[in-house]
Image (cartoon, rainbow, N blue to C red; front, side):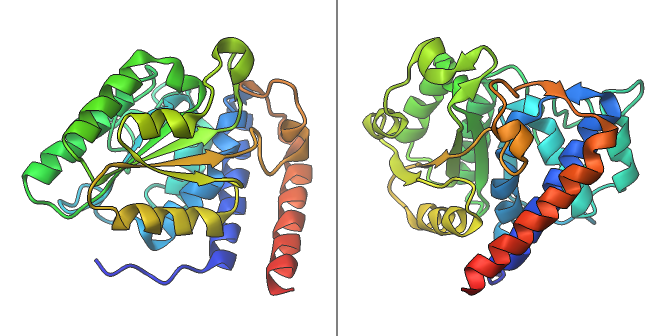
Length: 287
């Protein structure tokens, strides 16, 4: 599938729409995993702006790229982009984690169109992604598997077992992306279990490492992905240095927004803020 030309303005607009959908989705339940969902909105906007080979009309098509949201609690972010791209109607977003919903708290491939892998038990998505990509590599497929990890999730030993395997087998059709927002459920990652340099750790395991200083910049994310896709000797990892709660000042400044309340009455103000930021980004890019 020929890759579309990347349009930063369109990707930023999609990121704003994703954030609105995230907030709407979580507000329907009253609370949820806000921070880590908002922080990957820009990444998802890039992936679903023509980088990934996917089709809303045929979510199970054979040659599709695979996305593994290992930090499955950020399901509202994935649901947000899938709804925006037409995998299912947007009104389904208001059913998050309700009885008989197709949008459970953590992603489930048997329930939601566009979800390829069931995740939520931290660390397991890394193994699933490596196995999926390795199988595709053996079969000679040309698709890519995108694995999204949280930095707090890197505390799990299974992540590093998977990394050792992927590097050993030179699984170059696997692109790992770390949402390095510096916070996790119980506080700052440095306080809970200091990781040191994430880049150095993956480099030591045999990865091609790409560090993105502003992991909420769609242009920087796009360039990093293109670099990773050209690497043919090692699996690649993008370390996106993001802001937890990115895009909405209230959550950016909150000490702990991992899981918190979103009031329906606040949605118009949040939407207005997101629209304003989008306009500011457009002016900055044009200037």
